[in-house]
Image (cartoon, rainbow, N blue to C red):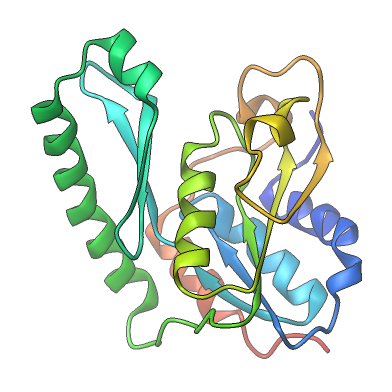
Length: 215
């Protein structure tokens, strides 16, 4: 175990991002659902704004836990052609999964933000935060979506990731920050004492608690 829970992971990740503390151009984006509690601690520690970046994994139809890509806000879509080919996924199946996930992405965006307006990313330094990185499909989609919305600089920050994660994610961000990148890595959850599923209600509460932040 590396972290007791996502809150501790966020506090420790924030220490690695101290060079951004108090910078008014910085916006922290949590990836729902599990990345949002981590992102809350980062945003509050740095004294900057928090929002969510809506992304959805595209799971292989017969193996939904296996990512063949991801979609993000602004029409971003990442497809891992190798996984699609090896899994024998047809173009029709890919489109059906993407359409289904787009509906869920839009539903959650409305539910999580409620009456809040999406934070503008135009010209800002955007810190994309998740609770860990495995395949990297959703993180890559989030980074591309941030750039598509005008981010001047993108920082990808996670508490834990495989040792070669920077090479895997090359070109996705301008800066990569991680607390621990162990050689032995099978799943993000193995590094947490409490890795229970984050609920929609917890995400909404995190966004409610976002302000006022410490300066």
